[in-house]
Image 1: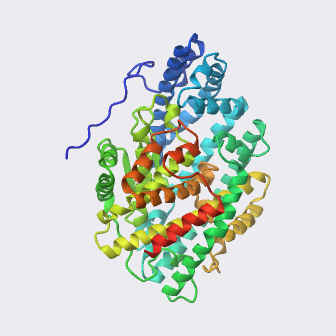
Image 2: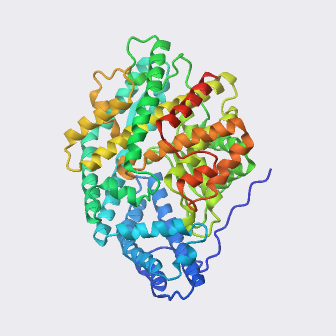
Image 3: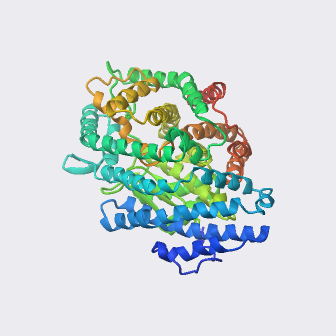
Length: 572
């Protein structure tokens, strides 16, 4: 089978073909053109919006590459400076001009005509929201927040441990927590914890500074707290903070008991007097760790094959990214932690960044980020950049559903039937572990920003209260109180993308429902998945979920129904 052709950037209609982002002064004439251009008809307004979309897509893609390269090589000062130059010298100049352009659209007498066309009602709703929360005095604060939050990646990228003569990143070291030798696991766990705790005060200080800056942004914009500001900023029109609290309660009552059962079962299977944190990743039956692949090339090849078997189009998506050099999958020193899929707005082909070693979790991370990538491919030909940017509750549905839909073809990674069954079992157990963790992080954030004047000591106490609400009671943390108390510091979302976390929980529920449909009828389940993703940001969240054949619902009864399905699949 021949490789798919490499897509080319669509021809530009507004800015020059060779134009690249260098300085604000070079960009300004194009913004001036939009600001000064008369809009005399609905067609004029459509063309104006297309031109603005083209300009903003070019700028977004330039920023994307600056961010990607900086996170791939956090120890390269030149790449850091190039990213910082955008954040300090270009982004602050764009923000007030964007507000001016938003107001120009909002004031247009032709806007009402467009509102009847698909996608424009959502665009207009978001545009008016942006006008409502914009404050010029927040522009320098956002610059400072961006610069401060990047320190988190640098601090984490520099964290390593020494193990048997090797220097390992914490991601590489964490693989050893799957070893069957309990002493090895304990030694590695303690080394990882000691390394994290070495920076606990620095990370604590950084977080306190970010909380203060964010609260100032919220107050400037007329909100009593940053949580309420972010709900408006994220465009959460379809649910409220109270819905999040209901989600927390539902997870506590419907999922935490399952988590408790899994922990108790693990303790019994391992014949332990005390289940310790370093006992949580190892196979409870004493089998060697699952090895899904060997190296980035093998991971890529197998990932492409899984996607191709599910649908040839999906395989082509990953193959295209590989051909274009849009995959950086392996962990190495100097690389920022975590994983992401970065949409590149102009070319339309995203970039996947990961810290893979060899574990099953790395394999599912590729399935997850690959789901995001497929979403970008399915929306790349929509007319405006606004149409291509779905709400996060939909974006995460794309990724989390792909983890489950792809399971039918995991024999590509695990040729041994016992290993395959074990991998699927671990994936379902991971769902039961993920939902309480999502509730923990989200509930913690609500408290953080409802109480912006809290002290680090109060934050520590609140974290432990919240953690214990959603954790099993079987795990023995004695002597490891500091490790538990500062565990929140490893969650990069708290530092870099505040309040971006509840989406994982909502999307996980949607993913289970989609997978249930897929189990009943594979072709219709997959068609529903793609049908929903193609909508991008053209519809509301409930409407997009409905297009997938599922509900946007996080009530106790619905969560109980879905968890009963998961339990049944685990028993199978």
